[in-house]
Figure 1 (cartoon, one colour):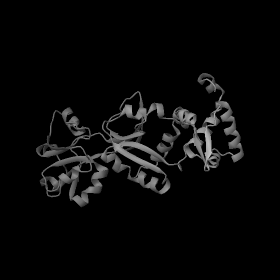
Figure 2: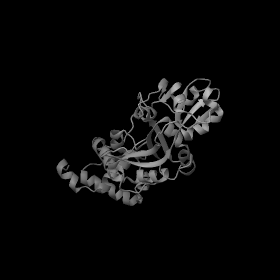
Figure 3: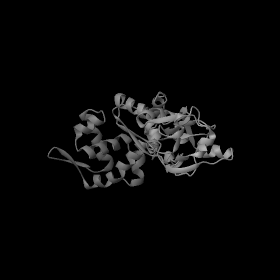
Figure 4: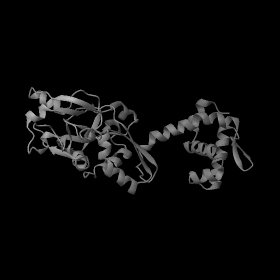
Length: 306
């Protein structure tokens, strides 16, 4: 038998692929099919491998190729090593949208809601692709984007974030509106004044458990503060707390317009300057040329309408 140091340089990688396939399928015909070989080419390759490793490797028993003890031993190293090589080389291959694959995307409840048209597009055009949305626990989860736990994060920002390691793709920008119940005293006002805005209690949406929102930051610049009565982490649930309540809620206009009628809300322009928020797709710079991710970004950029 060859010593392990002389074995690796002299062995053809294709023979190791043959070994792995045969080990997993137990069938020469299935292996030939998987590797796109004729059965006779497959048998010849197996003969070469047996000679190279000085072992039968597989014994035919009742029409099945059963691995020898030596084959079982080397399989413990060869199979994971081939998987590692395969993973290392896949990024060089173009992405095939017809192959089963999963994209893992961190979202807030609101950005997941914004992705509805994309989900519909994927279900119609790419049924093989799974979209896995997970909770976005920090604004930009750099480490998870780097190590591949996440492919993307879909988040929102108010200013141009600077990050050495993360690139972002702007999807769309939108304004905020202030919503109140139709029964609220200020619901009939044509225009919401700052005085009224500060007179009533507010609901704060804080996706990352923060104690201040963009409204509070802008009020602080004017040396003003508002009273927060309820803090919730989710955009989508927040308007439901307005029904027959004295509260005000400042939230993304796109969502507010869809929910206003069923929840009987009045939407008013906030009486202060609040920067537009931007919905962005974030990914790590080290992965920005991965064909799988660039393909997804192309799909993502097609959807501006909600």
